[in-house]
Length: 133
Image (cartoon, rainbow, N blue to C red; front, side, top):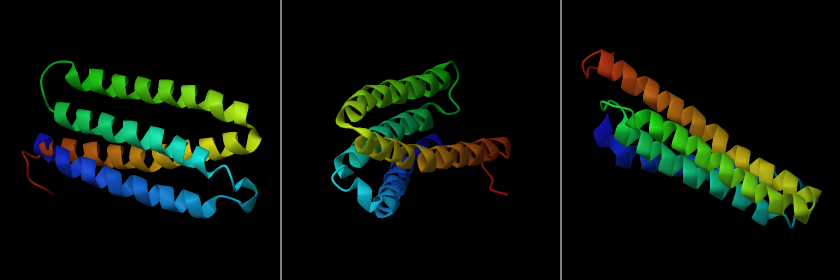
């Protein structure tokens, strides 16, 4: 499974772009003008998710603490970046803050589900000796 880092990154990018498209379509008309905050929130979360997830894919199944370091490093990076961006969004007003949080969710939720499914499959493949059930 470690050899599929490029596949993981590619699938993550496609999923994140689809999520951005869906979020863009769901943005209420009242939020028009705050789209940049939506894209900023999505961009922060999606970029860090693709990087962190690829790091996890590279460390999965290796001996040592590398996987845990990648897991917590990715989580911490997302948390810090999201918090830093939220300061600007809140200062820009309620509409910007709502759009920013929507973007964060669009970048976080679908990629978290993908990440969980990816590593569940990887763990099952590893337990079955690489054979798919």
